Length: 414
Ligand code: RNT
Ligand code: ZN
Image (cartoon, rainbow, N blue to C red; front, top):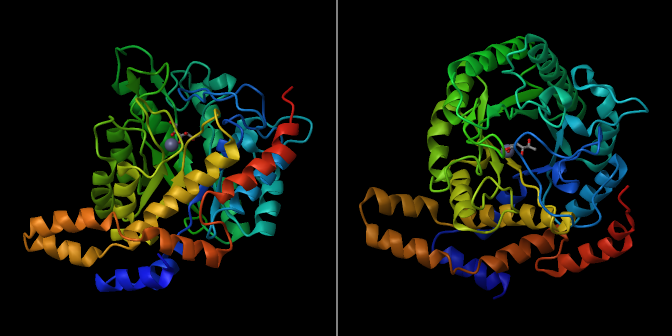
């Protein structure tokens, strides 16, 4: 169907496709740098620890900051709209000697800022409380050893300063997400102590008077990790309580709940009581497995909630890492899928559907919800891509395959 025919079909149900195209263009998605190198970072070649795991050994992962930046640039060239890039503290650029986590400063992130300025990206940030000798026992901010806690408190404060630097230099507030893997493989005898220590350490970090105009701290909850199955210190309840008390935002990762829970249902309550909602868009398969997001029911439901409650009230970040497929393709597919679901939700007569619900017209509501799934969304997506000068369909994959032949396949792993 042509765009003008689709436009008419949508107009009949009160949906303005031009408005939707304008709206989707304004929603930035924060693209996670860590899909590009399996969460390895530039400090060691150890790979991710802390209850997270990448599986697969697809060739061509980025080995240096330069390669990672080039891969991100290439991915972005196939994604419509303007987006953000999400960095982790373990992606600092170190000259000769590696600066330890407690001593990190803007100096290690200057090359990222210079690159982001040149490209017009804003940056988000994450302290890295894993893949480090002082996190080897799985406990960081809740560690019984005060010296270990002090080390990680310093890391947290150092990262707040780096986030302020990003916000200031790139003229866009930087979200900084705190996720700590702390927990136990088997039943603990004391569930309270680690949570008290965690709260006390976080208090010490947030005593640093960060500039709220430059950085937005987020706190991410989790259910369990690999090797950390029985107890997670920063659980959903811990995070809800702590974030609320401290006046920071809680972050919902779609992979951090029981598989039968509807994560989208949590959004409205979060919005009511926090005012803004931060999201890690991910896809659990059997466990919190961080597969590339697909256009499935979960993503659709989350996107609908985001659109119905105003995308400006959300911080949308992707979080998955698949090492079994082309990593650039994993980024492009995930970013486009996110945008596709947001656009579908924007092409929905949301006010009309709400009216049907309020008037108890449930037959019409159900029929309309289903019929909408077969509306000519593709034609509007294609028009959006045409205006953004990126391929609308799977032609983007041929470009990635060429990049794989010319660039990725030449990278030898040490
Ligand atoms: C881990 C969390 C966390 C990480 C990133 C790398 O379970 O989801 O957000 O994936 O910080
Ligand atoms: Zn996450």
